[in-house]
Length: 469
Ligand code: NAD
Ligand code: UGA
Image (cartoon, rainbow, N blue to C red; front, top):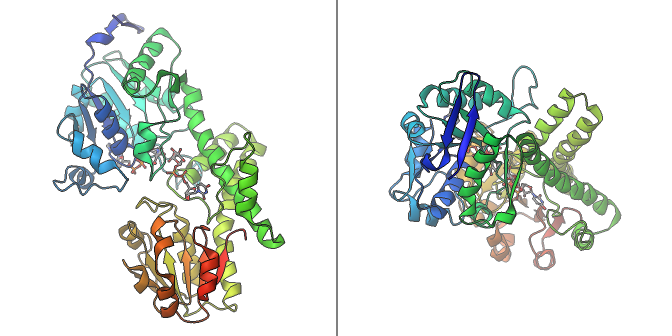
């Protein structure tokens, strides 16, 4: 039997973990809350898992009878089909869900703050704080609250201060950051490299950590479940994303040098990646990293460094973002140069708008930046993407001269150039001869992902540009 001892100023409460119900609630039904809880429910059939959100439309989509889920993620529909209505539920009734559970994951959004102190760098924590107050307001028993969102270091302290400001109920705050990547979310959740759970290193905290470990131990080997103090867990998530983003910026910085010297970035990456100390992953040069997290988390790290007076470290990490922004400007500059220093009224087809393949997510996608830079040059832009067109329409709303085409062949008709922005696998199998025949000449393909066979494109007659070649 596990007994939790929770000390308060007024009394000592014996908290019996075995008497806790195993119910889980996740606040936030987004890219992180939906897939994560679907897998937790699948692998813990004895637990009831409820995912709640203030966005009724999103919840309705999660509940849609034909499984038209609000996000696209390979394999997600199958998991939801298996568990929805069995032990996974989606609801807008946050109050009832919080009352009925003992463990609360919080997966609300933590975007970059765009106003006041820290604008453009710090995390906007208003959604997190609202959630804490909501939990506090409707809880009728003690709870373990688990940070799933990515948060600045020491957010758990603020959380504890709000939740434990009276002795009515006790809350233990843990940090369990998520490392899944979009497009491979289900695989990453089913076979994670590691699961991280940080918590207070006192008796109560350690027991709460064990409760969280139990959830994952039903399918993740214990050796892969790493536990730390809460501050290390919060910082590790920011550091992990910063390291990954830095690798992308590093290879993109080398790509520019390859173009200037005649070296080939894919060859360079293959050979440096063969060094087991470096490793082969995350060395693909491209249009720069996108996605909702890399930029926001590196900016957050920059802000934290500045806050603690570590200005040189702040500058170092800011360089990762600067290099990334430069990559999209370089793409447009190269188009400009190759297309006779004038782009006005030319048609350019963007193949792919999602920030990476196998997702419909377009947050911080390099394609949006490239589209805006092209629009400044009065380019006629046609955008196609197998999953991201609805988001593309919203992102580029108001931008003149943009059309959206489901079909790549139509998108490329009469175009002067095709720019591959996302590495969708089927682009390799398109009929490029047909595309060439329908384009204005000279016909240019700028493959910013280096995912097409440049030699066969050249044989057809295309002029081909790549990154780092
Ligand atoms: P998201 O915007 O897709 O989802 C967040 C959801 O929280 C939204 O549906 C929103 O309506 C809801 N929400 C906000 N305030 C709420 C409240 N008070 N009560 C109930 N619901 C509320 O965001 P996301 O991509 O899922 O990211 C969430 C967090 O997870 C972020 O901190 C992010 O950094 C982190 N994360 C995301 C990923 C990813 O792949 N997207 C991976 C790892 C970590
Ligand atoms: C990233 C991390 O990989 C996850 O571990 C993390 O949980 C997540 O952020 C998060 O915190 O949100 P994600 O952004 O979904 O996941 O996708 P990645 O595969 O990391 O790709 C990010 C961007 O970098 C994409 O635009 C991708 O095209 C680009 N990239 C990636 C490259 O340009 N080259 C590479 O070699 C790898």
